[in-house]
Length: 371
Length: 98
Image (cartoon, rainbow over the protein chains, first blue to last red):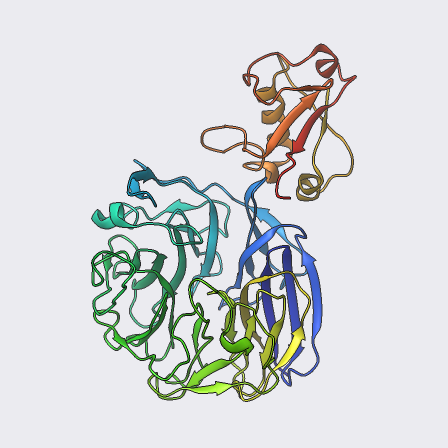
């Protein structure tokens, strides 16, 4: 019987949750790398036993870990993330220009075809790639040296490149998102980039429709329909039907359109999930109720999913990389909270249960469907 | 032979227990000790000092013989008892974070 492995990154280590295809009994292993921040773990789509993990601490910096046996054992690989050429500047909070400075790896995106090739999004925003299983990392500098970079500025979490989406149908096409700059697309495997933020409106910046400067929180795509992108922006849930050339707001009907994660059902490209958060000054769910909202129409029409989730006195947040889906049928949906709960649904969100509920604050959740 | 004490997280990362020892050819300095340490335990690269600038990470300190050597130039000779292996060179995670 096929199964699921859920990779959970927290503020104090990584946890690996495994279950068979019924997804009703879970084995929990961890903490791996206890005491370290695990911003992200993700497995290779072509070799699920190959997993990469971003481990970091304020004291000892960035470590990259690699497993070749599904997370049972790990080895440290390369952790040198040097900017290529002149470092350049970005906009700082006080309006001055400040040099890019490496802080940590936010997101690891393994290649769709090669387990040794992985893209890494870092803070301060830049994109790196390894082709030797993480031993060495080279920047794809055209992004950081884009003429607009001087207008990029940090969001509250730092100026991070947090989302990397690889197009499975158009060779060389990559989407990335930066807080607070926006979405960029490359059609030549990272050799050149252009911002694709037309239609975004952000009242928090001087020109609400500027080409860059938007605090995009996450973008998601269904692999069968890569021209359709969904976005959770700081405020606003957005959709593009033309590979990011233009965006429209599809968030009406939500209790709030602020939030962090957004994801797409594994088998229904028009079914999407968000977790509305009360506001950017509160960072917890509205009305003390933890509700995932599902749209089966690609936006506009939303239904709250509450069965099994706390509906009173709940004040958690769900971060941008902390939601994932598996590929089983029915589709499994998972998310982790700032309160240390990881919730799972084995029926596409109709009902939920806590797989674990007392972990450190959850930063990231990824689901692997196992053969 | 120089004795080096690592903080707990770096012992885990290097997969060692207790003190480690490194051999330094030539003058015993902070730079020479860290070069030897990183050569013996590549997993420690970047965790004590930056891999590009070689600057000490902000929350890491170097103690020896009851002195704070953190601000000393990296090519300054270490105290004789450290060079002789009678006292350890201590790499310490600074108290920070509450």
